[in-house]
Image (tube, rainbow, N blue to C red; front, side, top):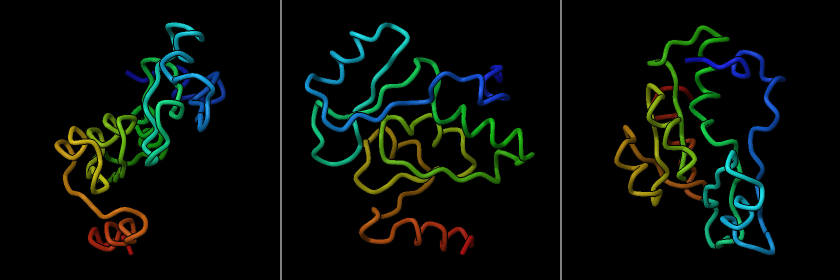
Length: 134
């Protein structure tokens, strides 16, 4: 089901807020804002409990991918998604080819079609080359 804000991105109030150094835990921060806000831990190594992403509950990166697919007329099997964190689960599951960065959450690796090394090992270049995109 495509929601109104998916076809009209300007109607969305906010996609996400990245937090890098909150004075309180992310769970506390999300709790203070209210029940419509969810939190996911930051996938950047060693950021700790005071870093992460706040987002509108019920909306994921898969929603964004679905909007792009619909607007550009791209078939699901012709999409690629690469991720490393809990906020990437739905997107990886939706994409025609889902790629997890090595060392990602076990749940993400389990649903991905393949894995690739991280940025320092030029994993994106390897993934795109392996798919024949570059």
